[in-house]
Image (cartoon, rainbow, N blue to C red; front, side, top):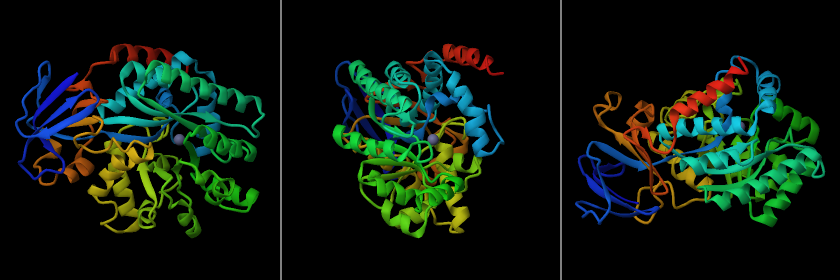
Length: 424
Ligand SMILES: [Zn+2]
């Protein structure tokens, strides 16, 4: 399809300046005022709208929206091991499919055009992405002590099966390895992940230094911090996403400041599970690459990146007592361009000719954004995601005037309520 967006405001353009944007196939073809519509193009009047790159949610577990508001106001270990894991173990593949689609609906409606997932249900996230047109980087969650463990072997087989399946059906998906954490994966399994990552050219996605307990038990067991332990195993030499990184020592920062390492911060989840606040302002000062994620809807309890951006900035200002910490400009970059870099897609994350068209339109006729003194500040400090009117992924229009074009939302509500009925 070809789309011509007329009279749109770009985030970087001076106030009042409008332009046209031509989307042809999967790419942004041209950006200039008064472009002629090619034959067969759908022309969209975008006056009164701002065009920006889609937000990239770099850490979630999409099927877990089925557990939204199921286990709240409980300690982390109770939340994970007593409430969430038993449900997880009883979900079917079909359940997970509907959970994934529910998450994709929420992400599209709030302007997210790609997400990084740690999945327990091979194929279902891929299928939900293929059916909806959503983009994702998918990693099968791995647990176990040794590479020979039955559960580790089974999960790895599923991971590779899922990659083959995804490539076969042409989903907008890339893949990586997802060892869950240093407290659920043994040293041998983690070393095996390093080997597989090298052999197959796959990036790694892991939770790291999320809780005080994880930090203390790693010190006790290995005599080093979680970050130093990962470095010791060779994981920090790989292309890697590290979710959380709340507990860092002075020495850890230098280990993380590498071009192949991306920290993904999850402010809402860290606060809700009482894990504290990641030292993001310091990470940036130390040259560490930081992206943003929501974590799952079971610990957030949503997947809305506008809310997450606001929390990121506010929390850093609060904990550093520095009002200049995480400016609106820096926060937007973290949620877009840094996210693109984290998933190895430098063609995303900006509105420029030649880039892949993962784009969102913001309706400026929104009372909570007015008056429009500073668009970037309005997006980080005032928006709530409901202002997102249209969403393009890979040049495909997936939401038009807030109507989802590829998802039957009544069906998703019906199926997810049917599943939830079992757990009430
Ligand atoms: Zn997580």
